[in-house]
Length: 77
Image (tube, rainbow, N blue to C red; front, side):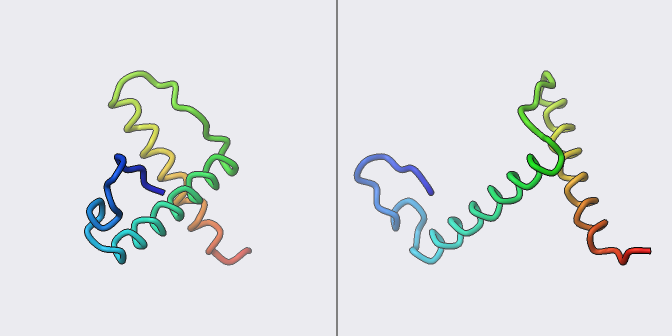
C-alpha cells in the first residue's frame, strides 16, 4: 500500500500500526471510488491544461459523484 525506502519500518513510516491500517483502508476506499467514477462517468485522463483547469476537472468529478449518490438515494416516482 505504501512504498518506503529500504530499511524503513512501518512504525517509523506511519507512527503506529493502527495508523498504518487506517491509512491502508482509506486508500482502498478512495481507489474504489475513483474506479466507480471512471466506470460510471467514463472519466479518464484529464487533458485540460494548467493547475486551475485540473482543479475544475477534479471538482466537477466530485460534484458528479455526489449527484449520482444523492440521485440513487431518492425514491423513484
